[in-house]
Amino acid sequence: MIENSADKAWGSCRGSDAIGLPPIPGPWLVADEGASRGAAPGRSDVRGPSWLQAEPEWGCCSVAKAGTVTMMLSGYLLGHGGRAVHGEAAAALALGRYLRRPERFPEGLRGSFSGAVVEHEERRVLLFTDRLASRPVFYHVGRGGRLVAAPQVSWIVGRLRDPPEVDDASVCAFVIFGAQLGPHTLFRGIRKLPPGGVVEWGAGRARERR
Image 1: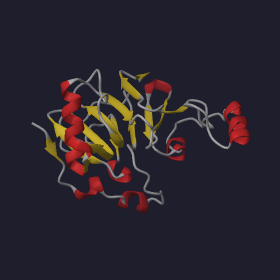
Image 2: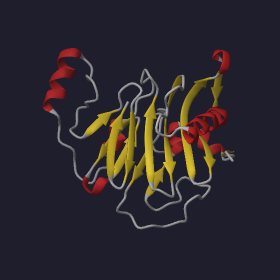
Image 3: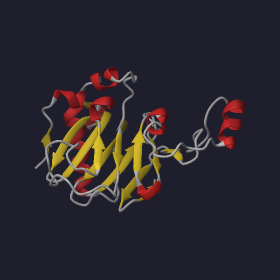
Image 4: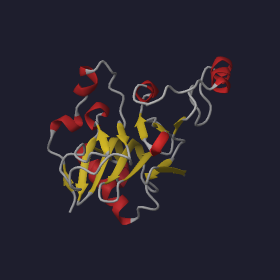
């Protein structure tokens, strides 16, 4: 059974304002396989397990849950007839699609969206974005397999245990073209999900697929 979060904080941007960040939509989270096991899986609050710190209100995410699986979705989906589906209804729709065919998700979804799926019992995280990458998702996997993800690179940099090295080639590309090319950013190890991209994280390892 899919449940929607009734906590209005999940769908607001007030967390961004409180810490001086712009309300950029998308998932903001840190997942650390090395963290001790804390709260039991399936808690109503995404931030419950000790291995995961997620702040969906900073990214204006809506939340839906089914058992020990949580969907955090930012943006909107296009339903039958091209009708836009927003908020908790969109999160529930995406979660239902994931539960039916997790290995193919988010194939078949249309709209402007990004988000994260958290499988608490398996301690797995899946990051995703739409076919145009209209809502950017950046991520970094560091020592011990620690995952940091956000729609803003500076937020990731501020939560890394070691300062990231500047990627000289990316800096040159930015100076020449005025933009970043492909999945690269100005920092080594911090990548951007490509259009329709997915990152599957678990057991301290990340695998990117499209």
